Every structure is written in C-alpha cells, then in structure tokens.
Length: 295
Image (cartoon, rainbow, N blue to C red; front, side, top):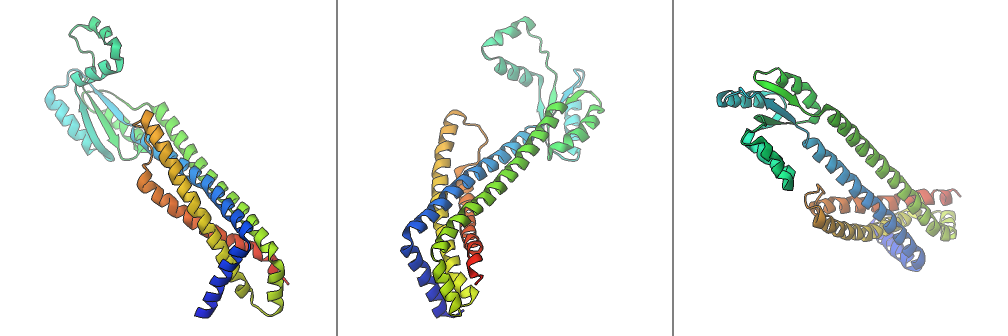
C-alpha cells in the first residue's frame, strides 16, 4: 500500500466522520455505553476472583496440641509441620495468646471468663497455611497422627462449600464477561451498519467503477476503529472515575475489604477497553460492509 493511498484512506475516514456527524456521535455513544457496562462487569469479575483468592488463602489447618506437650516437643512439632509438602507457614499460638484472642472476641462480655479464675482452658496450637487449599484434606490426616497432637481441624464442610462458591463465582464471571462482549459486538456492529447503510450508494458506485473490495473496505474499517477507539476512551475514563469513587466509599466503611486498588488495576482494564473498542469497531464495520460489497 503506497503512502498516497494511506493518506487517501485517512482523509476519507475523517471526512466521512465529519460528514456523518450525527451517526458518528451515535456510534461513539453506543460504543462508550456498551464498553462502560462491559468494563464495570469486568471489574466486578476481577474483584470477585480476588475475593475468592483471599477467602481461599484464609483457609488453614489449626493443630491443637495435648496439654502434656512441653516446650521442646512443641518446637520439634513446629519443625515437622514446616517440613510437610505444601506448607508455606506455621505459626505457634501459645495458651496465653489463645486466651487473649478469645477475650478480644468477647469484647464487653469479657467478664464471662471470670468464672474460670486463673485457669487457662486453651491448648497450645499451630496455624498451618498451605500453598493451595486443596492440599489441606491431604495433610490434615497426617498431622492428626503425629505425636502429642490432640486434633487437627480445618472445617471440612466449610472448605468444600467455599471451593464450590469460588468455582461458581469464577465460572459465572467468565460467562458473563463473554456474554457482554458478544452483546457489545452485536450492538456496535448494528450501529455501524446504519452508517454504512447511509452510504450504500457510494459503496455501490465505487464497486461499479472497478474499485477492489479492500480499497472500499479500508476507509470503513478505519472509521469503525476510530469510532470504537474514541468510544473506548470515554468508556475507560468513566469506568476509572466510577470505580475510584466506589472504592473510596467502600473503604470508608469497610477498610479491610479485599478489593483491587485503582492503580495499576485500571491501567490494565483501560488498555483492555481500548483494545476491545478498537477491535470491535473494525469488526463491526467489516461485518456490516459484507452485504453491500455483494454487487
């Protein structure tokens, strides 16, 4: 493709956008609204996936030791737990720390423990974190068989329900994002089809005078990419503003809720929106133009 041909395509693209100002505005607006919805649902999916990872990371094995275990045996037990395959961290919780945690949970009702006097009913324990949650069911029975271990608990039913929930959230999020992507493509391609339809006579005339399909197609493709790009720019800007505002409000009340930060999350989301908007604009033009090239 020569330089003069490229310049011709660029001139025709922007001339067409200016000439069909209302349709161009409608196309950009449709792209912006469609990608705004897609972008927000993408952020919901990403945060849902992040929440699922966070919940999975909180699943751990709590190993309760017998009261007869001395300091040397507890230290040896810590080494054995760390040596198990898949274990990433082992934290020892001594009797006094376990009692203090329970007092914190009781809050203002801490005086309920006064009936115990100076006796501490809590055993020494270990909190074991693993690399993947699925490994918990494998190593829990092994830990239970170790000497001086009273029991090893990990809430099997809770873990299984959690795994089912995270699978549903991830699968549902992927299906929803794909559905919205196809819906966005359908809406945008039909909007651009109106622009092509308004210029159908021009396409037919160019076809009759001997212009090749790609010579006719390129200005429309570039127009679709331009409209898609600018629609994506507006959508990305609005998504970033809305997400930042929502994040600040959520953090004001739920400071420790595991949400993805604005940066660099929005950089990746905005790049995705720009790519999808430009690609869908080109694809929408390509699909819409096929009918009119059949002369």
